[in-house]
Image (cartoon, rainbow, N blue to C red; front, side, top):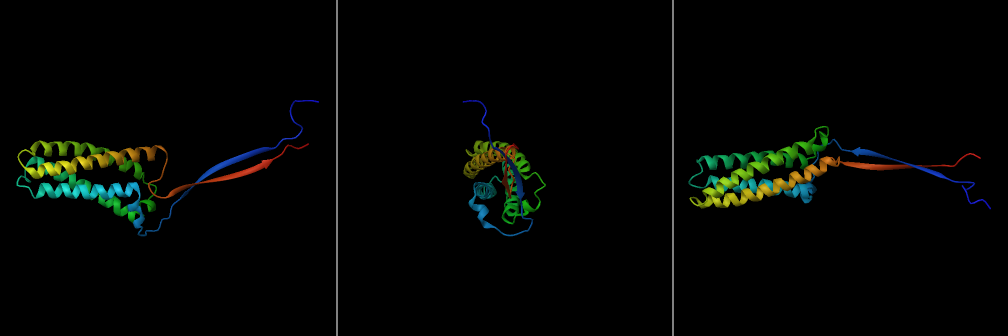
Length: 180
């Protein structure tokens, strides 16, 4: 009895391809706000607005610290708000050739640093104006939100994920047997 190679065997070849599925139609989809990136964007917009209001209603809103904080808050409000609208209406998906995740990553890193500076300056001035202390709190919360969003965007971009749309893996299996 020969215990060597069997007389018959089957070779299975599996090929996996990935198909990118995007729908280039503009449509309103509020379900984005129930995803983690959507909730982060909503929180960022709200924190930007609350910080801006706190500085604006204070007696020292015209100071250089107040001006810097409001510049950061309004820049974040408008950029993040526009991105939120783009995601809600699937405009990001329509223009999927743009590297949205990299753009958002760079923006979030910059705004994390900007908020660290702006909130620190506002916190230092809080001993003179209480509204600056409240604005500093919202600023530090926004800094954390932008930092976490940057971390998520970095990992998503590194893994090759899409900003909106999906990769659908397809497996094709073929079975071949040797000819005898």
